[in-house]
Image (cartoon, rainbow, N blue to C red; front, side):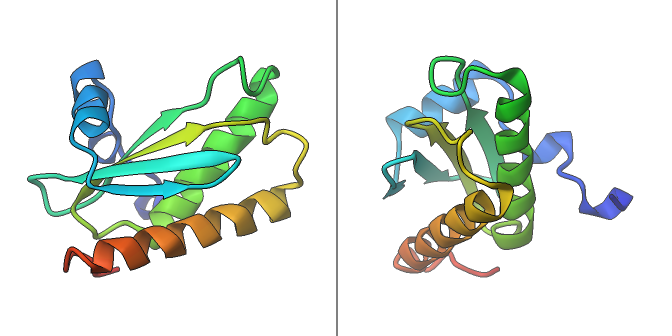
Length: 125
C-alpha cells in the first residue's frame, strides 16, 4: 500500500468520547441486516471512521481483521472528503461472506450513505 493511501490516525475515531458523540448525535443512519453506519457532522474538513466489530458477531480474530481492513479500504476510497464522523457497527456474522461479496456490500452501503449525506448538502467525494 502506498503511504498516501493508508488511513492515518487523524482520520480514525479513537477515544470513547468520540464514539459516544456519534451515538448520541447521529444525523445519518444507513441500516443493513449485516451492519449499520452511523454518522454526525464533524468540525474538521475530512471524514473520520470508527469501527465496532465484536467477538460476539465475528468470533475469529482473522475474520474480524479482514472485515475491518475492507471497511477501512472502502471508506478511504468513497468517503474521504466528507466532513462526518462515521461509525461502522457489525450486526451479524460477516465472516461467511467472500471478500468480493463483502466489498460489494460495503460499496453499496457507502453509496447509500453518500446519498443520505447529499440531503445535508455535505456530499463532496
